[in-house]
Image 1: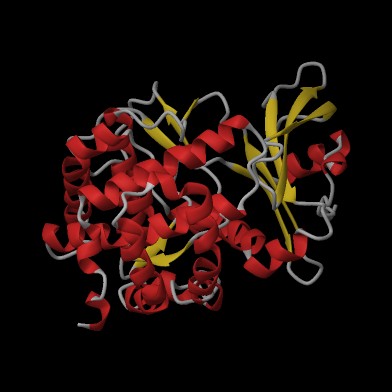
Image 2: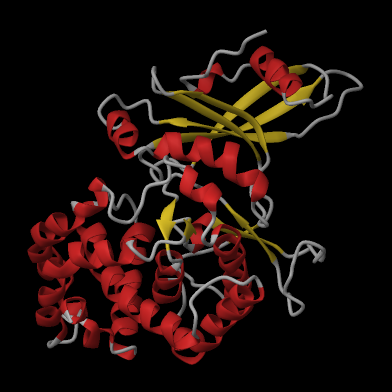
Length: 377
């Protein structure tokens, strides 16, 4: 029986789930009842998620919960998600990329995609029992090391890959949408200064005003170095940690230790050199003092795993320079996001203040402003 793609969370009925799980070759038996619990309300404005609590018939066993994910049902916001390609990208990631990556991602039970009618739906493993990362609190050193290894495993797998080149749905850094960022940053900069200017050292805003007109040129230059697949929303709120996983069979790193990282949310995957994942993680997902003390060791961890897989920058110095330059871009980007994104609660307000403080400190500590103007050298 052909399954209709659910366009509402209410469409994930017991009958629909029974058929979907059968199509996924899961011998669970019929789903007798389902209760949908909305989750992440207000956190993902382009999508809707629910934790489905399942009951199976007598004598049958199956997962007690699954995650349903669909585009937003807001008629004004969904066209934006379609235009940005976020639904198409995540669906294609789970279809074409997830089976080939050496990282832990949710298992897919159903992946519905109708690009013409613009309907998309995912039925995913519920990984909510793993320890969640907390962007506001920041990562521990052990977790950060595990994240660096995970990032390297993603980037190394797709480094200079002909398979990736053939995936025309994975946008490059100089895509039309990204090339519009400079204009957005120029428009929002006065608002950033009005609301958050007190967070910046007196000398820094003038330097960033020199950098913002260079953003498009930097993106074009970085696009020429785009050699791998990047997550592009690689922050603690999209990372979970399996503290009980001690299976290193899939790890090429003999020094692998710490928790297994579970990565979620692949709506923004793109092409890059890896700095679009590494720079924002280091710059705003770590306590300032931890990042100051350990950034180089964390980059060394990433570099070593890449090198073992015959991938990555030719020298460690090249990697460090690229990350230091990318810190500039991400500071400007976080400022723009802070004044344009909804901040529905106290945590969101605290998070944006914390992210900006961390990102500012990173740019200052790493003397990233030294690279302003270098694109024209």
